[in-house]
Length: 202
Image (cartoon, rainbow, N blue to C red; front, side, top):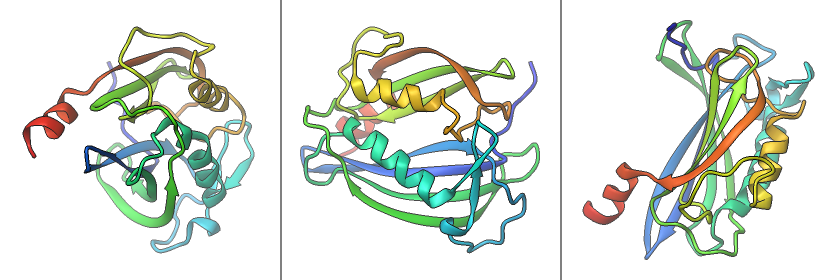
């Protein structure tokens, strides 16, 4: 099987979940492409355009703000829970090495009204146009550990995320550099490494 690499650009989202007064910062990375293949480091998100699935583009800061708004109900609204910032990295061809390009402050409180699932991990899987698999990962959401779910998802926020990812407005790519076209399932479980960090390292 061919090895697929991240990129061409990595959009890294940092967010914090606070449980029992202990805050943990998480990082999710999404593969994207830009209309400018060689952006200058330090270029603001507002001056960069991200490629969308419908072959148009969107201002990267606008896209990130929309994503923040879409996902913030997934996380409990208690003190210390927030979507913090985004970073843009450019990957070398066929490499895991990346160069920092820019950052965007989000500073957005989350809005979920259900208790967070400690050490929980939600994974949504997609089939890409190129035949690969794309995964979205969310840590310590309000989704309880349970059995897999298939679309339409029982949770309204997850279902809205799924609708967005399969729409022309989506910019996220699989590692085969193609867009997702079909959702497979949502898996709500526990992340072992995060469990150890929560209960054994403090």
